[in-house]
Image 1 (spheres, rainbow, N blue to C red):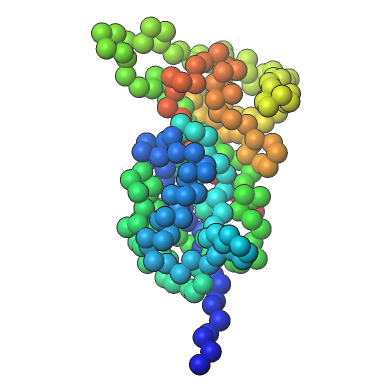
Image 2 (image 1 turned 30 degrees about the vertical axis):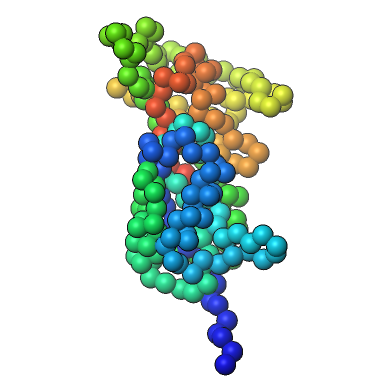
Length: 223
């Protein structure tokens, strides 16, 4: 008897990357997800060809050393399943630091997830980490001032270099807000080919990115 054809279904997974996943590279994260899929037992759809891979797309690479509470990924299954079951099965198979927050079905016809990302929001908290042994506090406490933020936002352009090419960092930053506790909220472009990096903004503000705990708090997609 002929087997029934699979019913391809696409789901969007919202998930958190905690401190345990801070230093996992993009390539390693893909491997983490592949192992999670295998352990979950879900009927994941695979690509065609000599080296098939799970049909799985992440929204936007997260810079190394950052955490996030708003990551997005699309996964294709060979049969429709209740979204609570998908979320539960993934969570049980996931490693520490990867928390499944929500799963929803989305149309197969939607464009690739990574092409839909328009804006990302980040929070930078200072200082990050503990002083060295015998050191009561950081030698150079990080201080962010309103005048630093104002000067950045008032600049017509801020030319930086990445991979040997110059670009205007200021044009990629929508807003920066200095909060009462000294933390920074940054709302920046995350479009393909026009993405700002939070650590570049911190450097442009005269700050040491290594002393900040940076977390992605929101991804905004095209309508």
